[in-house]
Image (cartoon, rainbow, N blue to C red; front, side, top):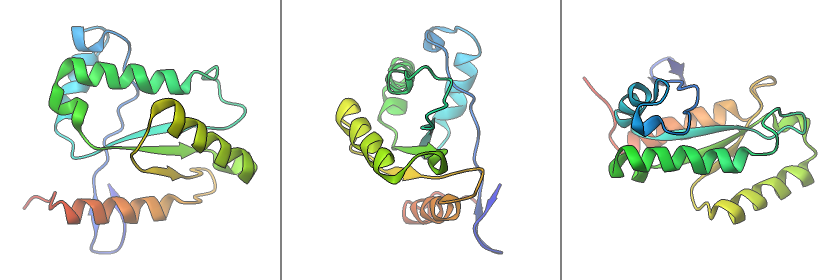
Length: 143
């Protein structure tokens, strides 16, 4: 549960990544994909630090995940997505802006991109407030 204020909060589900073939039942894919289909927005949390162990294949991973979402269900593939770039405190500002441009260009990404550092909390409250506003604007609340 993310508390934005004493009266405003929402729930985030952390799905620890999908394996290729998840839409055909590989790994825990079907369970994860069913869970994702009940969400109102998807966030891709991406490590942009120069020390990332993703092998520099982060963009390809996002493409693979989106391919699995679309294979499972067209509606899930069309769900609104935001990119959340984490560990920005480990990058100089110019390098971060370069990374954002690269992501927009290579993925043809038109959605929102948010920059945070979970460690220092930089940008995390701004992201939480924007998510809360998005949920309120789209009336994604239950009694």
